[in-house]
Length: 447
Image 1 (cartoon, rainbow, N blue to C red):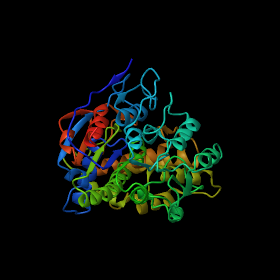
Image 2 (cartoon, helix red, strand yellow):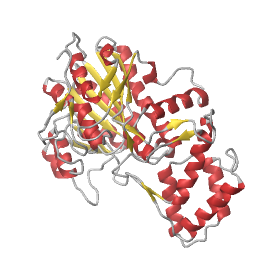
Image 3 (spheres, one colour):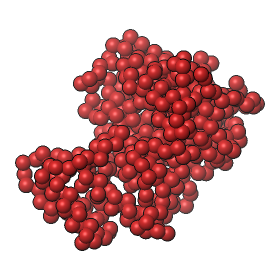
């Protein structure tokens, strides 16, 4: 069985193609970020993607489910073929299918793949790998090394306690550079930019946490663009994924989501500035692989309000806060409720800028005693992290106060937005399907 979407011919020639994918970035998160941009940051211009002339919807269902996972969605967005959840770069019958990046690379385009999560994760992997299951990490890494692409960037270091990709990268003449301090050491055609060895292999860290010495998505996108301009100045294809958007949405962390989308927008601005210099040769397409979390503005607590300024007082992500809670639970030092209350004031604005009722404080204190003092708490399990019950309640209060609601800790079947500008962008209107987009991109390149 093979499910593919047809292509429409068009006369165009896009020499420079940017494909931006906000992982999990449904329209709810986009509108929350735009509202924050307008009402809290006081910017007089909308987010860059919302200034593009072509705007449409995109359906995301996979070959075997109305609710896709990232592997099936990434495969559809990269190859134009619907497949089963968990499958990467293959059709439902496990026959390899070719990505738009590979097709363009074979025609002489330089290719760059950039993500804020692991470069071997589902979305980036869909542009070069062919495996029956997205969990096949060694095979995916080997396919990355063998792709011959000019630039691949993501969080996963060359070596971890579980994996060492030194040999496969060396054997394929890939120069590996780690962290922001090594970007200026790039001196080969083929580059793998990774996170530092002491960083998480799964993401580069959230914008809100301001982790010193770590990569950022705009930094990685800029390095990729500079590299492609040097080695394939005549034509190139870049895929840039905001993977951390999805991680934060799985955790139902509204404030972190908004700041990740604004960070994604900062990376997109680099491409848009390039487009302004080459308007007759450039295409930019922005979309998402699926919607995560069912995030929306407006909830039962605030009703017709959405005071997103409450997120201005949030200083840490849910993951960092949960790790902090687990660390103090392991500590021999006695940690009192008064100490935690001070932390909540300083890092979330609770009790200060966000009112907390006596009933709410009593519940918080009870959960604090159970989760941290007594170490007896059932975790909230999500795809990328587990959160103790105290952290879950803290973030529920913050989200509620800001007017944000969620329907799930997983994906939804909601459609996602598509924004486009440049050569061939007029074809990205109407109701799209995710497997239509690669064909439209190839058409824009004159194929």
